[in-house]
Image (cartoon, rainbow over all chains, first blue to last red; front, top):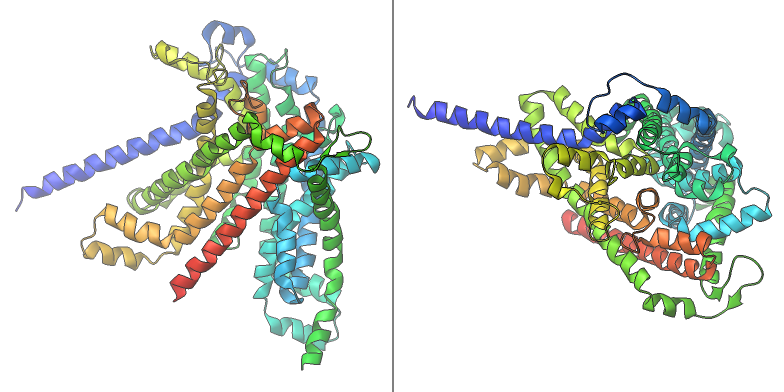
Length: 283
Length: 302
């Protein structure tokens, strides 16, 4: 009876090692591109030329990052991205809340059709909207402006928000609304004083998602923001690839300063996002 | 009471007005214009010429168009099917094995690691991989050389035979974190007693995985497959930065094909036809998925 045990234990340990090694390799594959970009972004061009991309940098050299930052006026791109993403997140949440208030709590007739109508903004590929939007925005003198993008993305993100929030508001405690109505509160007052505060968690999840999604958008900003002063981070970095001055270290530097904001947002919003997923608020 | 009901509802319509106006301006009108333009020849200036279904006839004969849809099928494999399969295994291993033997913290650190590529903007992911896969100074070929595997070095994005597979590999890397996170959240919902009962009944891990995990995660698998398939149909950013659809048409996708016709060739009518077909496919697929889901739910509740 004493013998089989160590064998099982050894087999268990063997399995354990195989699983852990496999996981470690997969994790390395997932993170390696980030690490190797960071490694080469802080390398001097001559160091890169001499020792190649997989050697450790001989000295910490930030000229690639600084040069690229100044050359493309990266501060400006960051500000543009912040303006667009921040405005879309705020306006998108407001729009979602108003739509969902009417559909989820107001239970308007034809609710399903309205939901489908709104959600289609999210489903329809942007390619099917882009040319008329481009054409119309030129007529309205909104072409090459952040305002145009803010309006379009507010609708697109708000579509998803409306869909999600409507199903949350479906289960909103009816008594609270009725009680407020008896107290003589109007519809606006009920929305602002009762519904919004009580659904603050879901709204903050939406805010985080809208912000990140808009920050990551590329196609419409690429079409609508043509002047250097208006470009967002994604557009600036995306269109610069293949330019003559983009040597290997400059490319890595540009990639790194594109990666960093994304990682910062990930850490800032991580809790909110995971709360959203685990609360079943977001699928 | 019915009277009160409609009065109850009436005050709410006003909250829908901004949304209806905005959606009409940003979605309905442009979509109608795109569909209308798809029946014309138009350079973007002057008056469009009505040509009926000529654009669609031309599309059906255009090898680039068929190539772009074939590539989309392969990108669905890379963005939806492979990540779902790997994600299922990874999520199960993290949840059932790593969290149990090494603790929840290790499991969530690993999950965050796999999720990291998902937080990158598409264009930045393109920049990162464009450099790694660069034939002359990229990291991958240098690494292969350093490992003595020079025979494996390739012009990953420049060779028409390899470019699409390289893009597919990049997309698997991009997508993998999403199913892992969704499936792990789904697993948390499942009653652990079910697993204990299955283990007591002598079910091995493979049986538990097939009959318990996959079965109970069905709704989550569904959501992941639908959203990632639609994402694959819309893919643009990575293609634009990595290959611009090239070399030739080796990595051409419908969205980039439409973009090219709109803004590079000024074939607005033709670009509109491509976009209209893409829209029809996405809406058709979505409706089909919704119906499938509805009938699936009916079967389950029966």
